[in-house]
Structures are given as structure tokens and as C-alpha cells.
Length: 194
Image (cartoon, rainbow, N blue to C red; front, side, top):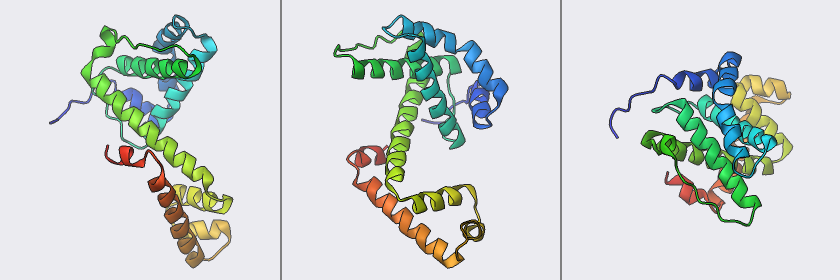
């Protein structure tokens, strides 16, 4: 793929990662009306559009926080195509009609299509992780959430009011269980190879 040039619109991704309210408001003001119009013109309403935008914003926030999103095309094309595909997939699930995605000129940007693929893959991995994480017991979830946010296991042990040795062993068991469930999931192999 070589050296791909990062688009100046990367500032939107960085703003999302930083939870910058000015950047988020700018996205809603500049890019969301186009999505709302698209959804309303394609068998949806304002509420559907808001749901789609919300899901995409959460997905982009998570991907930006994971530092895996490097924008190589205009944010507008990327955001619109992501919302469009999300809506058409939702619509396809809820209606019995087949849906044909006719890519318009703004959507045919190769960089945008490649990024969409990466984002959709990130979303699938995130959903698999979230589903399996939810299967863990409360104690495992609490321990892992704390260890994700607090880097020092000594601090985690202190917060949970248990010993350092217990926290290390319990974390190892919880991560082992989570990993096993993820690897046993039906869609794991297709996600692993990407």
C-alpha cells in the first residue's frame, strides 16, 4: 500500500478521540444534515437518522480512541458512506425487501471505501468483544474494567480491597476465559485473518 497521505480532515478523528465538543458540534452541523436527508429519502425518518448517526459516532469515537483510524479521504465522504451503509443494513434487516446500494460519486472514493471496510471490521471485533465481555461474571468485569483504566495492578488491588496476588491470578483467569470465548465464536476466524 505504500505511504498513504493522511487527510487534513484527520482533525475530526483527533477531535473525537479527545472528546472535543467543538469538533463534535462541527460534525453535527456540517455532516449530519446530509445523512438525515438521505435516511428520510430512503424509507426512514429523523429518529432513524439520529440513531444511525449516534451509532456511527460511537463507533468512530471507539476507533479513534483505539488510534486505529487514519483518514486518507475527506471526512464528509467517509462519514456519509458509513452512515449510508449502516442505514441500508438496518433497513434491510427490518424490511423484507432487498436493498441495492447504488454508490454515488462521493461514495466511490477508493480511500473512503477502504476505510469503511476497516471501520466495519473494527465494529465487528468490538461487538464480539462486548458480547463475550458481557458473559463474564460481575467480579471479572469489574476487575478487567479497572485494569483497563488503571495501569498499576497494585492500585487495582487497593481499589478492590484484595491482595495484589489475588488480582493478578483473577485477572489472568478472566482474560483466559474471555479469550477462549472469543476464539470459540463462529465469526472469530474471519475476523482474525483481517
